[in-house]
Length: 210
Image 1: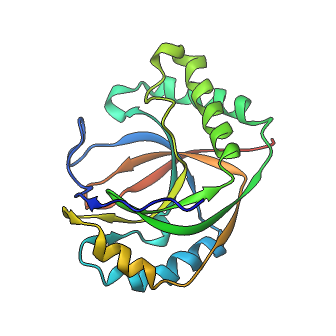
Image 2: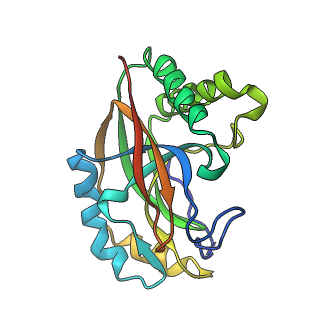
Image 3: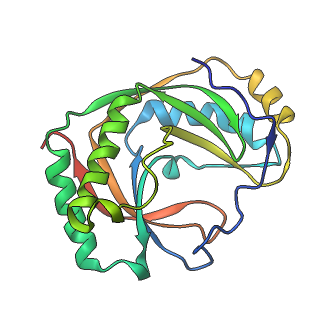
C-alpha cells in the first residue's frame, strides 16, 4: 500500500529536548553497510533530491533504519549499556535473519522516507531490543513508546518549513525503483548531529540467529 504524502513540511533540525552541539546518544539502528542494492537505490534518488534546496540528502554511509533509543551518554552508566548489549545478544539469538524490500518514497513532514516490507520481522527485532532493555532496567524504564512505530529508510531530511508540493512533484518524476536488503544484525551506535546530519560511532553489533 502506498504511503500518502504530507501536505506540508517542516524543518527537521530543530533541537529536541536534551539535544545540542556535543550531545551523544545511545541508540539501536539497522545500518546498510555492505548492502549494494540499497546504496544503488539511494544513488539513483540522490541527483533528483539534491536539486531540492529544502532537502539535506543522506550520504550512503549514514543510511539507517531507526530502531530504539537508550539515552544520552552522560545519563547512562557504561555498565548498564554493556548489560543491555549482553541481554540483546540473548534476546536476538533466536531471531532468524530476514529480507526486506525498500520501495517507493513518500514525503513525510520532516523527511523523504521509504517504507519497508515486510514490517513484522523489523518489529519483532525491535521488540527483542526493548525486552533486553527491560531485562536490565525493568519494563517501566524502557525509553520511547512502543507505538506508534513505522519502520522506514530515510533518504533526506527537510531543512525548512513550507508546502510539500514541490517535493511531491519531484518524486513524481522518479523511476520505479526497489531494493532488497538482507538483515542479519542490529547495531548499537553513539549518535550525534553536530553538523546537520545524523552520524555515529559503532558501539556493538548484535547478530541474528547466533
